[in-house]
Amino acid sequence: MTDSKRLPYTKEQHGKVGSPLSSPVSPSMNAVLQLNQLSGGYDDQLVVKEISFEVLEGEFLSLIGPNGSGKSTVLKLVTGLLPIHSGEVHLFGRPLSSYSTVEKARVISVLSQEEQVSFDFTVEEIVQLGRYPFQRGWFQTYTKKDQKQVDEVMELTNVAAFRDIPFRLLSGGEKQRVLLAKALVQEPKLLFLDEPTNHLDIHHSYELLQVLKEWQKTRKLTVLAILHDLNLAALYSDRIVLLDAGTVKEMGEPNLLKNSKQLEEVYQVQVQATTHPDVAKPQVYLSTQNHISKQEKALVEMYSIQQVEELLHIKLDQPFRTISNAVWGEGIQWAQDYCNFYVTKDYVCSDPQEDVSSWMMEKGILPNQAIGMMTAVPLKHAVHCTRSFHGVSFAAVVTAGVGNPVDIIGDTEPQQVRRAGTINVFVFVDAHLSDGALVNASLSATEAKTKALAAHQIKDKQTGTLATGTATDSLCIASSQRGERTAYAGSGTIIGKGIAQVVYEATYQAIERYLKGNR
Ligand SMILES: Nc1ncnc2c1ncn2[C@@H]1O[C@H](COP(=O)(O)OP(=O)(O)OP(=O)(O)O)[C@@H](O)[C@H]1O
Image (cartoon, rainbow, N blue to C red):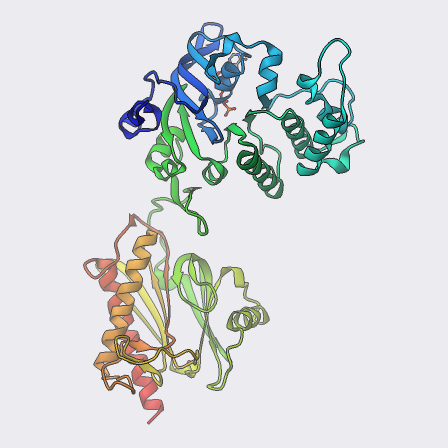
């Protein structure tokens, strides 16, 4: 078979995003389960309409989609719980209808949402039931091998401690883990899961999915899981099938979740797709604040600046979205408190993060919503500037020490020592910036700072050339996220220009104060 015949996985078959994928498929060599133009439902009502996809050996395929889109109905159709209206289901290349119940139980197990346990069994007895398909004849024999498998799986799923406890006495999450153990002792080749992480806390969701991933790797277990949690689906699935009103809206690698427009159409809610900070997988967030109109309060009314002893503290009345390289609060996040701590020139930065966070706590500032920088410049030399440009408001608070200026392209060795002779820039902008726009905004602010250094003819002492910064500059851009969202804040935009103007003005003045103070 040629690759082009494996239609469900090619771009051609995907068609346009949003088009239903209902063409028949030719089976792949390694298809464990194949749904071909499958339709079915309840009485006269067709719920699943001509859907086609394959589950390949050893893959973790997640079915996602809104409530009522037909996910559980698909599962009922492929396990034989519901009669097929039209189309075909093949299990390991054979029509599903040709399997006896015991034959099916030897290759598939199901962890469904509606699993009922009517008798007063203990946890161990429930798990032992999973060995049923392996027992033969009228006088069924439960062997040592069966018990070994039961013990092993109970350990893996963390339920061994409940072994002798009646199942009915367990919490929802504990019951879910026991039922997973029962499904796994069946040693299935194909495991169907209907909302397996329902009832589970994040620790146990993680453990359950890790166990499944492990079995997937070591025992070639194939998994077809219904997941509501799009972020778990993104992290754990090899492929995802997005169902909408009983049809396949799209299928493919987890990156299909980056299409927020499609998710919004299907789920009827505003979302933002981004990526996980540690792994190359998408993550989806609900957008609760999109297009908030400008409120009465002006930017300057949203913050107060306090200078107490060795701290310059800018406090906002609500968190702003930030991008920063500050000692504390680096990366992209939200922050409400912005701190610039004064340290003496001989301050030794063995653990600056620990220092800054503990200083914050001493001042009653919560580090988890704060940005923290440090400077050896007297805080009374800080400059605060505001500006309105084309109706957008900007503010900057800057301390500048230029005892350590560097021309970044100068042919000198990088300075390893983190000295506190630095330019610290906080910028506040009343706009709604995408993450990309925050990066743009950082560039705009940096270019403006470099211009301010040049205007003062600040030079790298080693090269004698104009300095582009100091060795340890910090920057934080904070955006209110009010108004229309924009992806641009570079030098060709109102926001980029506004940032540059306010940063230039504040940095220029701050350098002036520093130079005067050192004369
Ligand atoms: N036993 C039933 N009898 C009649 N209609 C049913 C039955 N079970 C489900 N339905 C209907 O079929 C449609 C799809 O239901 P299904 O449970 O497959 O959706 P789902 O995607 O799994 O939803 P959820 O995310 O809420 O679990 C729904 O409109 C539902 O009302």
